[in-house]
Image (cartoon, rainbow, N blue to C red):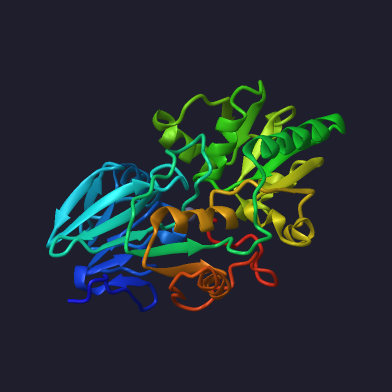
Length: 341
Ligand SMILES: [Zn+2]
């Protein structure tokens, strides 16, 4: 038996000897689902995920009778057909987890990160790593220009944006994904004394997660007639929503790691871009490899070819899985139709 765990890529990451898919975009017999963002969701016969991810998926997508779940507490393990599966917090959004897989026969190990970050978050548990022989990691922001500022600096930018909007009599609006980033915004501004109005999808997710979040500011569901003096939080896909057209004087800010891309403000068509991300930046990606100390690395999402070359130059056995997925901003297509990143 090969001492390293075999990994294959056929439209998604597959561990053939464990009969397990990792975040496949299609229905499968058995899959690990790292978190409840829609670009990671499909209906599987058996879904292995964290307990909180199961809760969120049930709220977001509904439950069907033919689906079975193996829900594990974050940090907990399950035994399955000669394998030990441990779910580690991923620090991406509420409920997000990484999968650490260990083969009983010889102790061979694999860590799959899913979407993750190392920076502390206010709306989810901090990431925790375990050593593994094989590391399968996302590399969304794997170019050196993606080094995100500190949380303090990002918060400062958000405050400045809000203040400037109110000063010129405008209503400030943040575009943030309804699951994850929107709750991070609310938690970050919990003590600001500001009142928030949330798009219905943001409001629903925030209500579903209320018991898992810390302090939150005053918030309510969006009502255009009462929005004066409030800070709005809407998902990016709602940019052309008719409800927003009723508001004459809006100042908009996109919250995204892609804010560090050239001309992001103009390409997103917003007044401001602020680099609040729920992904690892370039420095964190390198730090992850140092923490996990793998014998080999497989890369998925984003700049996989470039980062594989970067890691090889640093002495790691690193390969890209699948092809470059053209994530970057989706320029030329629907800028706001991006997966939840
Ligand atoms: Zn995600």
